[in-house]
Image (tube, rainbow, N blue to C red):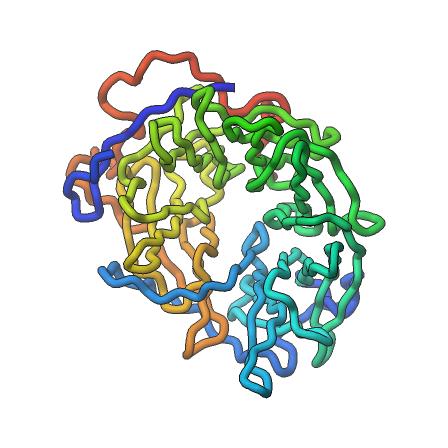
Amino acid sequence: MTACAIEEGATTDDGGPAEPEPEPGPGDPAGAVAETGPVEGAPVPEALVPSAPAEADTAAETVLPAFTLTADGAYGARLTAAPVPGGDTARYAERWTLDGPEPYAVPLPTGQPEEAEAQVVPLADGRVLIRRRVAERHTFSLLYPTGPGTGELLLGAVERDALTLLPPSPDGVSAYALAVGAYATELWRVAGGTAGPEHVADLPGRCSGGVWLDRVGRLLALDREPAGGGPVKSVAVDLGRGAEMTPLLQIAPDSDDRLLLADPDSGLLLIRSDAPGHDRLGWGVLGSCLPVRFPECLRLPDCSVEPFAVQPGQMLMPESCAVALRIDGAAGGRLGLWRPSGRRLHQLAAPGGWLAGSGTWSRDGVLRLPYANGDTACAVALLEMPEETDPGCGPSGRQPSAPSVNPPMCTPVPLGQAPLVGRTPPG
């Protein structure tokens, strides 16, 4: 499928011209008892922090370990470390509970320290899936707090050279992984099945990424490189139809077009492509005939800009969705807030100890950023989208998403075809 690309003018944050160019008890794997608070020995909970960090010129120090959130933002998980006798540190899994009145972290150490390459994914029932490398195998277990210790349920193993967990499924119970080969990519369901890890399909080409396109965990977008080499294009995999693969995004025949983020409610897509002549961050709408846009305000020289959260619940209003972005440069890490309708990137200092690249938006536009620093072991900072004050905006405070000049002539095809046509709103 194809789509045209147009570039947008924008202003920077100072108004000047833009640069050119119910929780089951994890002690019972069946989930019969509800957990009501931190277990003994867990870090002391910290209250939500209502104040938002002010815009600043200096970047805040961030915490580097990867932090993964469930699709609804209720739980998070990461590998963390604690000192042990001898001056060394030992890694262990840690689960954060974020959907209550106070966030709190529960350590999940097992009989031996975890390796640095282990991966963790939180599930909707409060358990944490962990992938470990043991010789030539990848083992999968579910960890859960049980009294003062950690329970572990072994799910099974997959014998492959390399295996990577995908982002948590929106269904809250399933977890998937990719094993990339020379000519095909194996898709595995490693949790949520009936008998341990299950081989789902062999997908042609070398697949990476992983973005969910719906709220039930059926439609998965992957970035696919042909087996014989060639441009990377995003494809949709329908897990309800035997992992049927269909084209999702093609901006130009020879461009690398990757899907970074998607909001199933509004259909907003965040895209990275080199179709404009160099690597750019852009946006489009699932199922729309409008071309993909590449705002100038998202193009920051000598910085990497990655979107990590989109405001949900904006049905049929993709341009009004607030988007949170991680900005990394020589001066350190920063936080970016942006709306497609605003054409303006607000840059803010991230809270100290932010688990960089993680966070969720509420439906009413509040951004929740998990962080841990010397003063607290588990907390959440709350931010709201700044008001748009660009004097060039109309009475609504918003500018149109397309440039004032006529776009180049093209015949764009909707960004969604076969299993994506007929997408219905959740609920």
